[in-house]
Length: 150
Image 1 (cartoon, one colour):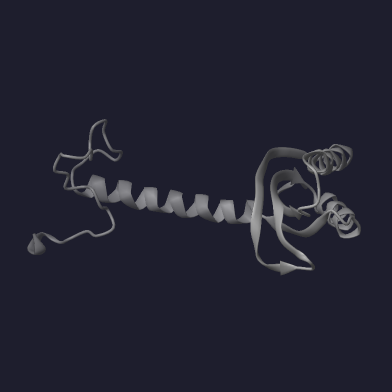
Image 2 (cartoon, rainbow, N blue to C red):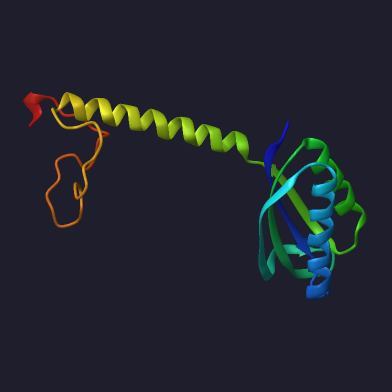
């Protein structure tokens, strides 16, 4: 079963750009061999570390968003543990968090649509509704004031 993971790794400041690209190529090769795909790669560049790691005070940060299995991530983790170029790495599964966000967004949308219908408005916002400079009674659907409160 494929899941979405974010892999962030910090490469030693002694490494060249060529070596950083080689690490990415290795991760890509492992992903392809094990049936995964790399959705996105971002090289955040050289940055100062929050605290000293070994003798390093800065490093090159790289983010990879990977679709793959847990076995794929275990293999990448194992490879990063044995290389001297990577001074820290972190793997986070993000698909579960994304599904929670989607469920929350859908629930809020349904509540908003019900409240709009209860007020006699169309369920979805109309083009131009709620733009700056225009008074908009429906700007915030979180609070539904009763008739006696208005």
